[in-house]
Image (cartoon, rainbow, N blue to C red):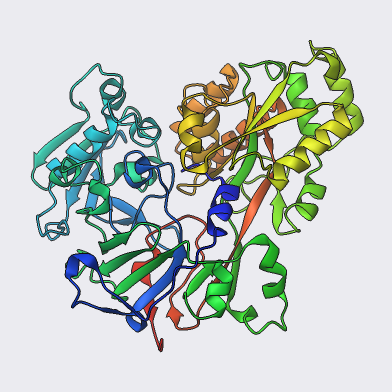
Length: 535
């Protein structure tokens, strides 16, 4: 989840700073005598959230810090499910009871062994109603007793049982083929109780279990990670990772040799796609497993009327939007599933761009046309009164094709999703979703089932709910995929959201960074990389 507001990410990446980059770094925790030679470090550019909840695996809306934290299972660069803290597991014949066997060499960064009680603590903490996690029901809610714990009806999670210090029994409410995939999300990561309860800023000195230790964090300057020599899957090949915060525009830092990898923003992509560009061969690109869209809150007028939702959708020209706003560097989103996701349907019937029919639908609505609509507020992530080019383009299309004007409100990006989940937004808002695991359930069920905590537009279709519930336990792959394709068509027809684009990722990577794979899902990639010939 993970919510994916790429406009928000690009905005943060473009914030400029004049902080100098030195040849040596001095981690504060190691003392002034300890130095990190950059030829032994993977140097990256980045930003930091000012929202503490984004650093806690149990409350983050993003990918979490997979360098520092880990869970029972993980995804490799080819998106295969692998054992992680758990070295193996068994599944009962009825598909509802998992027995995980933890690695006995797994340790926290301070050297303490990881036990089943640490897993149980981490998951019960995530489900504690006082933590107000927006993700725990989505990723751990299949476990018997998680919902009761979350709603304050139980003190523990009934479906978790420690058979011994290294054997955990997990009971889920029904056989679900995607359950293990959900455990790759940060909500299921293991944290150290003593560390978490040490103070409000515990996350700045985390005692994790992952391949890297966080050894320095200077706000607005840099974050430094050191390879964990005792990592249970083997010490990573790259000794250090240095993230320079707000240090400049990524591709320019890359050109000057100040970073080893950098995302390329839309306005610079054409240059690096040119075969005559010297850095062309260092550019990696791929369609992401992300879908951007605009949510219509169906509980608020005028989007309580399906004809209004369809009218706004059919008054939006995706092709022009991609060519003009996205500079041609995105894929028009005809529906929910990204092209690389299992279940992507070439035969999907999208609502077409048809301004005339859109105007007719608006007239047929209970509002009788544009003159009968209430004032419409569009919520977006941004600063001050500036309006993003994407929202501006949509607003212009709706005004031209429907005669409708909208008002845009910006919410500070660091706290945007806190406000969305709290219901403090207009009748429509911009968002998106990137796959947390490669399964259509992660899109259709997680986002559009009426009981899902991620369904912030409050869309409800009992027929769709029944279909999604049936698909949850269907074990025959082809039949299951067909169900999710049927579900996608139902969602498109009801138009609870306006699908806009699937993003294309562009990343520059130095030739001496070996093993790089541009994965469509965020994984703990650095532990698979090595440096060869960096000077």
